[in-house]
Image (cartoon, rainbow, N blue to C red; front, side, top):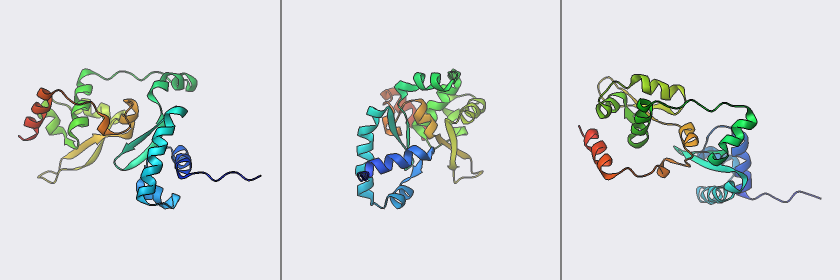
Length: 181
């Protein structure tokens, strides 16, 4: 008896399951022998099937990864014998929120919004893998720009940045004003 052929979504799931790291669209298309439209359909199917298996499909900067559903985090941590991570300080949370909603953003832009030195908070976020350098601003000094990581999405149970909750209008307006200065 032969195994039944697996559909594209199943093959996609297998690749993402074993990769352990985010995989770029082009690499998935190459290995699966499909086109963009077929990949999008397989990704949609995998998004639908994942929750029934305790998994979520995460998308970040055109790369995809399977992760444990956030609702199962405590179960998985207990099984693996992991301690709960230490909580972030208020300064680190403020900095993380600015990066998440304004990315890519420089340290100077973060400090202009917060009104205080943010280097320690930024270093904490980098050390925890929630924020990473994503480029340089093409101006004098070429300051580093920061953005969130796949680990940020996993930690907050988001499949993509589009799932970030909307900010209240007054905060959105403040961030827009600070960004134009």
